[in-house]
Image 1: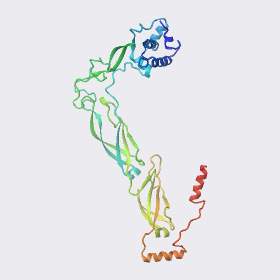
Image 2: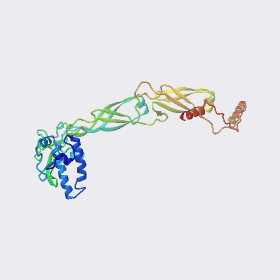
Image 3: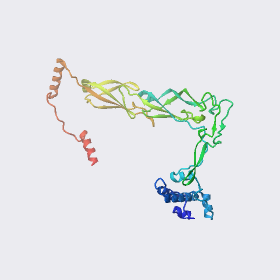
Amino acid sequence: MADLYETLGVSRDANADEIKKSYRKLARELHPDVNPDPAVQDRFKEITAAYEVLSDPNKRQNYDQGGQGFNGFGNANFGFGDIMDAFFGGGGNSRGPRPRMRHGQDALIRVDIELAEACFGTDRELNVETAILCTQCSGSGCASGSNPKTCEICRGKGETQQVTRSFIGQVLTSRPCAACQGFGSTIPTPCGECAGDGRVRSKRSLDIKIPAGVESGNRIQMSGQGEVGPGGGPAGDLYVEIDVADHDFLVREGNDLHVSVSVPMTGAALGSKVKIETLDGEIEIEIKPGTQSGSVLPIRGKGITKLRGSGRGDLFAHIDVLIPNKLSKKEEDLLHQFAEARGDKANRGEVKQRHETGFFGKFNEAFRNRK
């Protein structure tokens, strides 16, 4: 009889990983699906039988002490789990019955709020429909006065086994018991309320506090408020996803807000005061004389409350100077007088000289820094 270590091509002090790795390599080369030559099939039987012994610590010890370790190739009883473990790194060993009580799934709902609610926070009552514990059977799934019964097919193991003959000998396969779906027990008299599931669907109300500073896409986790698991298992979590509606005139950018303020040409030239609406109510801002269109006036502390931290962002008023597109004869004469008084040339534009301290200066500085 050939030495089993030589058959697998490993040394006698090889560890379990080295033995498994060598068997995988040889099995892939010699498997009948790859090479149907009868001589190769005999070789495949040999390396499989050797692995069946050397992969089992007790059988290997017996073999090293002079025992045969197996009963020959023709009657070898190879565990399916050993072969699966060698090929895929998993195990085909008995897993036992699976529990009826399992953890519930998480649930997700979306809540629409206004920008002001996002800024200052709000409380909401949520109406949700999820699986809850069946109060009739307290999650057992059994009708009153009855209990689960050990499965007569698998005798409580939750799986059945089948032995089949193949060219490598007898192969033992295991699969979940069809009679009890792998639970190891059956429910002869299911609960009439939940039909044996241990839970029922129900609508309920929840109160949630939405913190100040949230934005669209933020999720609030409510632990244990999701779906109750089968068999009355622990409930999952409920996630509330926030969707902040667009405001009529305020635009959010992080913790800051932006608003466009239209100012008449005369108001921008002479200066004026303009009332604008904010999330805090109406306020008055000052337009200084000579304010240009596109100017931005910062209003400190009138933005969005910071979700993580203290304080609030700012509100930025973007000034849009309104130029009249139609003038009366009197208005036109007055503007001509104004232009003459300033020495303006009404029919000619003027190209401004570039100043390094202005926009182009900053642009050039940024460009130079990139080189």
